Amino acid sequence: KIGGVTRGGKVKAGGAGVSSNPPLEVARVAKIAVGGDHVLALLFNGGVVGWGSNEHGQCNIPAMNEAAVSVAAGAHHSVAVLESGKVLAWGLNNAGQASPPPIFNATDAACGTDHSIALTSNSTIIGWGNNTVNQIPHMAVNVAAIAAGDYFSVTLHFDGMVRAWGSTDEGDISMATPTFPFARLP
Image (cartoon, rainbow, N blue to C red):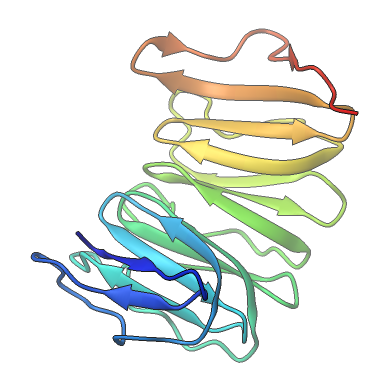
């Protein structure tokens, strides 16, 4: 057990094998990101707290001169999007997953095992890191939300379409035109 978040939004640490505990209680939590074996919490005040395995420095939060607005966690790396739209990444960088290109308009981020993607304010995607199975979305526009798994990425578009790139244990989840229509809710 790594710990938990109370109904009031406070982080509680605990359990055997926790190598980098958060404070027993920290400020209210706005968002949680779970990596391979570590957790990041984005606090309402824009701070970031990490705990769990820190073998590759994925819980060593770098100095931030401004508040974070989003966090994401990969297998052994971490990403934060700052209020200015800049992206910070740290931890294992064997495939470039912790070396984002210069980004100044990010609004959200998602991480796979060793790739990362950022959603920009103009509704496009910027990706970095491992792309051996085409898990980094290309030519994605009008994107409303993003998510990533081990070796795949998924985008939700403003028109209600969901698109996927990359591969799972079951094989390739992308297609020449990776578009999957979902029913729209009233």
